[in-house]
Length: 69
Image 1 (cartoon, rainbow, N blue to C red):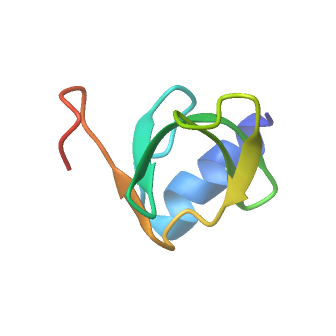
Image 2 (image 1 turned 120 degrees about the vertical axis):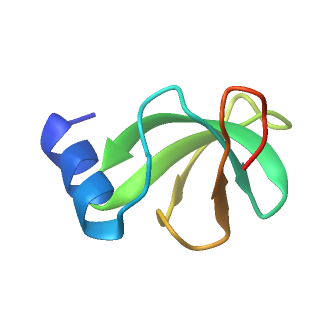
């Protein structure tokens, strides 16, 4: 993860993306594990061995600490 990528994503897309944040991608729960360029790197709960790149605003719901939007 590069700090520049994370800062860019938060600023440009106006999202609360940070490492360790809980999200839902296409309805599946997961965790942001890093950033690559302008993409989130996400580990989905149903497939913990795989890390997938996700666009910061496409089909992503950012959850608060209680698992709610």
